[in-house]
Length: 148
Image: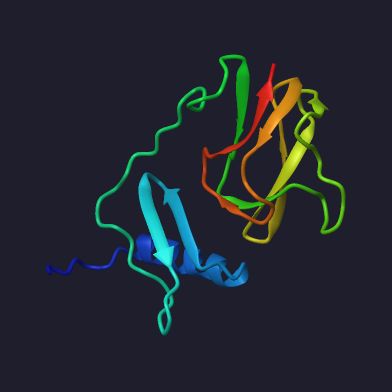
């Protein structure tokens, strides 16, 4: 196996991803950063697996497969941990079936210890909330579907 010199930016990215895994006690993490797919898996006696060698382009369809044409997607504007409520034990910002209005806060994404309120561009009814509370989401990943 041929070794390649370490890219300092890639090493910094890997270090941050490993830090996120430890902060949130994750056993696995799969995320695309700058067109490069990283998949880290915690193993006994090891911190994480190496990333795959080839970059993988992320595909973000306008409407997710199986979703009706009138469904609009709210996607993650950054990599972070998805929180459905403003605090542990609090009511979620939205539930399936709720009516939302444009610019309404629908969730929080935590990135680098900052809580980012995520708003919707659409008015309509929430038909699906995709990530589980506390789940790490990737840039561009669907967070919820809103039927306009």
